[in-house]
Amino acid sequence: MYRTLLILILLAAIFWNGLASQTTGDHRGIFVGMYTTTPGTNFMLQLDAQNTPSSFRTRPGTGPWPFWGNPFGMTLDADNHHVIVPGLVNPGGGQFALVRWDPGSRQVVGTLWTGPLSGGPVVNWSNWTLNSDGNPVTIDNADSVQKLVEFDRFSGAWISYPLPAGTGAFAGLGGLEWDPVDGEYVHAAWGSAGIMPSSLYRTRFDGSQTRTLASATGNVTRFGGTLLENGDWIAPASSAYQYYTVKAHSTLWSPGPPASTGTLCEATHEKYAAPGQGFYAAVWDAPRGIVHIDPVANTYTVLHTGTASTMPTTATEVTPLYERDLSTVRTGKGTWDVHINPGQGAFSGKGFRIFASLVAPRSPIALADGREVYIGMDPLFLVSLFGSLPPYFTGNIGTLGATGQGKAILDFQTAGTVLNGMVIHLCGVVLDSRAPAGIGWVCDPHAFVINVRI
Image 1: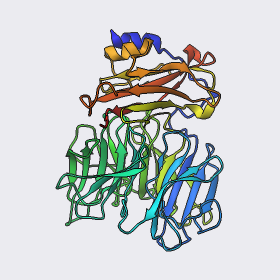
Image 2: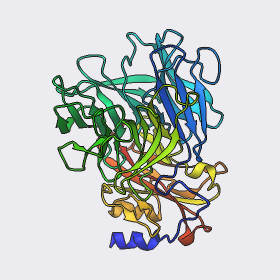
Image 3: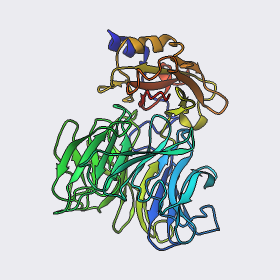
Image 4: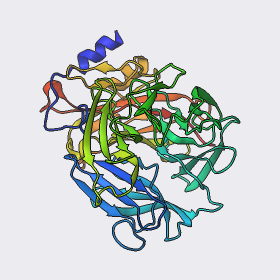
């Protein structure tokens, strides 16, 4: 009954072509980080929606990027605009910083944190992701015990969670993501043949529990794996194959196609709401470039071929821009803002709905045009579909502001800590009379974990 009701309410015929980027292979811009160990030789590359490149050299004290570099593990911020970039600052790289890059003005516009690298909160980071508090998170593999490290933007402090014994060395170097469906961290260890396995893990939001999903004796992962919307994990491979896959509910690393078109490094999924199951990746060896791969349709599309001016070094991070259209950010010990910011302001003045559910959306609702709505069917969904649930969830039905942004509020102060660890699944849509059937945008799913602090 619930599924039928949702289909009747969310019917969409053909997506309005004026607002692209919810179809397979489309994007609204890509930000790329590249790496060398020589000061002043790092580059940042930005592609616009038409794949036109702009490049920026990381040169100390000059230009739009006044840092030394090592920009690896970037993630899109909760505002769906800025990119959080970790890097080494000053000519010797003796300091670590988390900075915010503005892809519009193409420059650093703020610093979340900076401090010494040696003895600091993060020494040898891997990939970064954003959790449901809106905080940047990485795995520090400098010590024998791997640590989940989180920068708490609300307090300005660092939180460190030692991972359980047995978690593989370099966990996260092969990829680290906040699972938007299940509300856990998924991360891979970059193994080494004869020394340690390449393992894939799921870790609880507070690092207290980790379970191994798959393990391989050889090194089957490279930098930056990604979680696809069907639950498959894609890992760029340092082998004869383009990538390895751990399919949903599988415990095996399955090889993908031969690496005849170049070895991949870094992979980032495209929008969950888009039809298809593709991802973006960097090609490690010559000719270097940025590609889109659809492992279901078995297509390989070159978006950019590197030149000496745009890709003189190896790309180690590929971040699609403006893809975090639904997010949550902690505003107090038991309160969070729910941000909806779709289409880069294209929907200002349009109505929006943010749905909530306690059921993980493992089978999305497919609209007539192929887009997918990731929301579970339960009584909470029905309540949020037609109204709010004060004081816990309010403002979820409203109108986007002049800049195309909206905000709802989650408030669990009265519940105390009794609900901590519970996952609330969120998804949103934007109503647009110009679009057939009235649906202009479908937001990606977002898994929010209640974590009230006392």
